[in-house]
Length: 79
Image 1 (cartoon, rainbow, N blue to C red):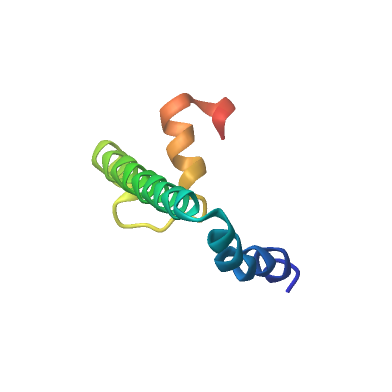
Image 2: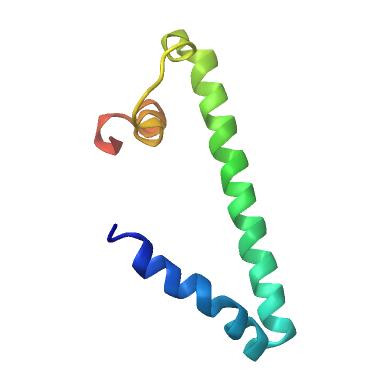
């Protein structure tokens, strides 16, 4: 229950901050949304490549998918 409190303040103040920033604020929010979408696409493609190269991950669920991608990409120090 601790996590929602810090994030809710930023979400609730976003419309006011956007209104104060004007068109530049709208452009910045659009840019951030696009970067978040691209990051999600890259992570999804990374997981698909991992499943293709390591068949043991195709049918099982892993609790830490980002750590698994890092482990097989950069080695044990990335885990």
